[in-house]
Length: 410
Ligand SMILES: *[C@@H]1O[C@H](CO)[C@@H](O)[C@H](O)[C@H]1NC(C)=O
Ligand SMILES: *[C@@H]1O[C@H](CO)[C@@H](O)[C@H](O)[C@H]1NC(C)=O
Ligand SMILES: *[C@@H]1O[C@H](CO)[C@@H](O)[C@H](O)[C@H]1NC(C)=O
Ligand SMILES: *[C@@H]1O[C@H](CO)[C@@H](O)[C@H](O)[C@H]1NC(C)=O
Ligand SMILES: *[C@@H]1O[C@H](CO)[C@@H](O)[C@H](O)[C@H]1NC(C)=O
Ligand SMILES: *[C@@H]1O[C@H](CO)[C@@H](O)[C@H](O)[C@H]1NC(C)=O
Image 1 (cartoon, rainbow, N blue to C red):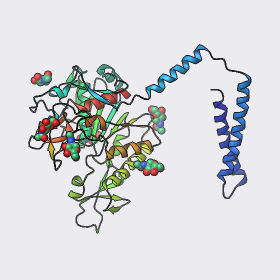
Image 2 (image 1 turned 60 degrees about the vertical axis):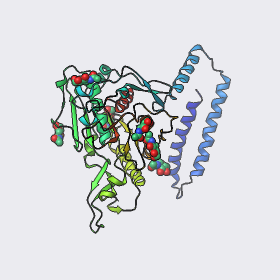
Image 3 (image 1 turned 90 degrees about the horizontal axis):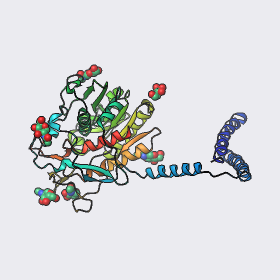
């Protein structure tokens, strides 16, 4: 241990040295190579001196040192606990709530109430390979959230997670009347803002609908006729200032970045005020996510706000045109022929953008866990059974598992 410290001091010294060197001599072309070489020399000298000292005074290895080492080892093996690599196991303690008793589970996701008769899909718990998701203890989480502000931002799948979280938490609240939507608003598909207050615990769980996270813009003059609106990839959503002052901030986007929801309805990309008619959705997605990343870096105080980005959730459309929705009775097993590759280009981009960031953000990589759950979609058990739904999930269900993982971080 001892010989690490001087070397870092050496580096610090080098940095100072380089600055003085730079100031004093006003080198026109500041030669990095020279400085690096000099620094290396100084650092090596310092290290050598330390090794010399170190050898002269042999360290005494005591029991304490050894147990310290074994602690470090066990911490290292904790790192191999990947919460997102695992499988679904049967657990009779599930589901965690009854959607018919939760006023914030929207009717289109309440599959049992809409006539689903098999209920095996409610009994699965997510089990990471090398560890466990901390058991959800509603009393503990309610206390942890006291005085806080939880904000979800994204599309309808963000809304589902918001609903799931409220239903999970309401289970621990005796006086259900003490949990209410701030403006008395009703849940609807296009509502821009929903905020539920847990008054006994003085916290809110809010949802902002922002399907692209970036701003919807006007059509520039002289644009081709087919252009009816634009997505401004270099500016975050106009309502983004409302998200900043939060304690837990959870994002998602992906389901709207496709041909049918963009070009087919005349919506094209715009960067720096200029139309980008030929830009691919994936290139646009990457640009938008980088806009989001610099917004987080510049506007959000990540010492206070814990930021999460939930990755893309696999849907289970099948058939020749991908319009068939066959909800199964059981989750798929990885070895089955119906199991599709769990990777998603959206999720890969999210992971890369987050990895590139200079502030701490947690990627919730829920893509693989959802890919097994062809049994957990809404199917025809929504409020509109004529339109099958293999994208959204029944509640209770998969979004509860996302929240259990989210709670395990706080
Ligand atoms: C859920 O609650 C509803 C309404 O109270 C009730 O009719 C139903 O039996 C409950 N379902 C389960 C699975 O407990
Ligand atoms: C909802 O309530 C909040 C806080 O009271 C307020 O700032 C906001 O303008 C309201 N929004 C709507 C859509 O009513
Ligand atoms: C960021 O949050 C931390 C923790 O709440 C606080 O101590 C700090 O003052 C905040 N920084 C700014 C610039 O607001
Ligand atoms: C997996 O993908 C193939 C090809 O896109 C599709 O035909 C099949 O139905 C999918 N299976 C499931 C369970 O979604
Ligand atoms: C739906 O999936 C099940 C289980 O994989 C399969 O047995 C059944 O044939 C499928 N039904 C249709 C209509 O594709
Ligand atoms: C991440 O950073 C690298 C290096 O600057 C860059 O090449 C890459 O394009 C970035 N990734 C994304 C998805 O923006």
